[in-house]
Image 1: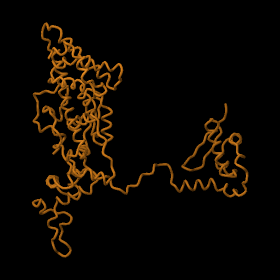
Image 2 (image 1 turned 45 degrees about the vertical axis):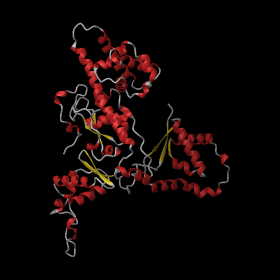
Image 3 (image 1 turned 45 degrees about the horizontal axis):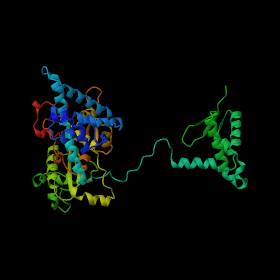
Image 4 (image 1 turned 90 degrees about the vertical axis):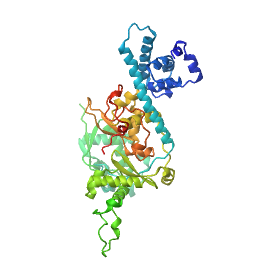
Length: 248
Length: 219
């Protein structure tokens, strides 16, 4: 068994079947694959025997980044350590070293049992016999997020806002190009500056069309974005207060 | 079931208005069966006992009997961690899916299946224990399993940092088409049992009997 690594099985092992490192779910998966491929039992000796092959695989790390890079390297360095000790003539039995190799073999054996289960699970799931259980009963109303107000409040708020404009809409015959956002911003800015504080409804009331209200709202938002004004709405769909930000 | 349906005071066993006693055969097991049918989630014997004002032992006996009765036919009764739930039979899966207009599940990856195996046979487990067994970071398979409803957080460890403990759900059994943990493949490691903390160095000396591998059962 030991001749395997002494004669350098790396080339032949990789020639017949080379899986990329990314095919493996971690260092134990790779290690177990190599041990099983050689037909070895999981012993500390067989771990040493597949060290070269393991290292050949993690050469890939320079080209392929896998999320488990550090884990592959950690196990690789452990293998190198075990192998170097195995190659050196043992002057006296060091129990610690034996333990370390045995521990790794033991972890691999435990992992192997769970990997076998995972394969069983895979077979089960491929049979496609998942059971169906009852779903939640129907008729459950989705909850309305708090503080958004009711639909009635929204309709009322829109109505209040548009109503003054609606009453005068018949007299509006001016083309839409009449409204210039820059101009509107300047107007609103000067109004806010002069008043110090006013309500959006005050501005809206002077508007002669919905479009003008929209331009006014955009102008107010622009002032807020420019930090020339602040706005505050105390409740959902309530009055919007616009306040001038005094320049220092 | 006949032996336990006698002398049980349950809805429907009262004499009919005309004085006849036609519902004599309607027993505790039948009521429990009905509760499992209407429930939209798994039921514990304690919950059923509370609803019916019966002692838990009678309920358990009725549930065991029901599970036997449902070994054939179109329905099964799932048993997971002392929770019972009615489900369709594995042979009906294709047709149920056709009716519901569902696509087959996407299959779980090896990483997810390994993680699931560790959770199932070593629960309750911490994420650290899963990673110790697998030798690799298991964050994403674990969170995927939680998102699929196969695994859930079932508490916090008393150990340093109070890490989250994970266990399987009844949906885990349903996913693999089995109605109890006994029907799952057995773990090929007799020394493993619930409560074993050190995974890296399991001591073969305190090997529990193989049947103790069954997970997290309270009955």
